[in-house]
Length: 388
Image 1 (cartoon, rainbow, N blue to C red):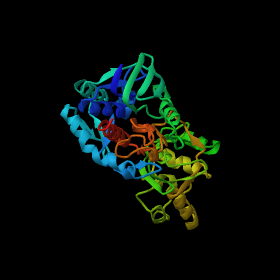
Image 2 (cartoon, rainbow, N blue to C red):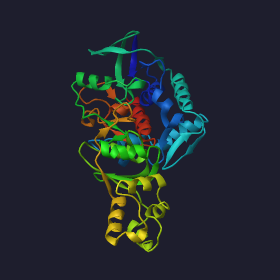
Image 3 (cartoon, helix red, strand yellow):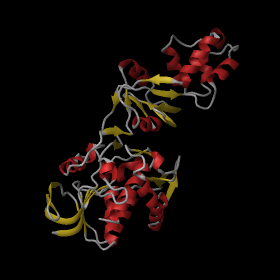
Image 4 (cartoon, one colour):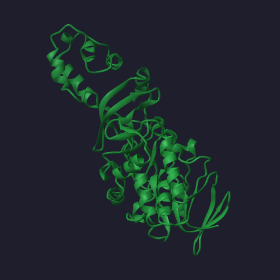
């Protein structure tokens, strides 16, 4: 069968692209190899879908070309998707740091997109894996449901993250087939792992969370960190993981709101245990475990000023060197991807291959945690939908 546009991948970016191309009167076929569409939408935000962020700006994205995402984000800003959500009567709320969630269920976002697809005349085929793509005068696709031909082909199959939901390397293999460069792929927004000595400490604190500032290579995030039996997780760790590389240290400030030395010095003459003093600002299990690692807690007046200075410095600048990450199975996104030098920022079309578009996570644009990656999916899909 012949279509004006075939889109491979019925996730956030693919659905948005299909809607927009359909609105332009194009005949659109949307292919999904899973039995259901929008699986990453369904599980996102604890099932309530953190569908965008009020603060979304190009500065919230990682890419070899930091300017590439500017055009799409400017042409389809956060307010446009919020307007779509409101048009469909979906109640939502801001949680923290500009993050917007559905009040009820992520399924509402999927249903909204499906309804928009229906109104735009989009044909959707699920359980339809693409086995081969050829290009002559048009794009020819061999699939599990037969052959399809199209003028334009949009790749919206995402990255390698969460393979249990069907993630594959399809986008990267196809890009390579057509001679496009791919930047190194890494797990992003992912928990970090550590060597045995650190890991024993973290396991003893499993379940404890801490409000902290985490830094690496000039990037800095203040959110919760979570100690687990596998290492460190929580929003601040997931954020910094996208910047971290093997062999590098991360710096953790466990007391971002106070001057630890001033606080300890002001309590120096008391007979209280240092653990009891620091309990005012830090979780008890963390403080107790911290001092058990270095010989145990003593009364405040039994510490020298030099020792208090060392304790304060270590709490403000706790240096840790991760051994790795928990990999793509636990990563929320894939960093790296289709080299942005290969694509038009205005259209998302490959410069070398007329009619071939790449959108969403498979492109070398990775957002922060908190709805930014969905906003990139909506924006890049919308842009491609204006031209495919």
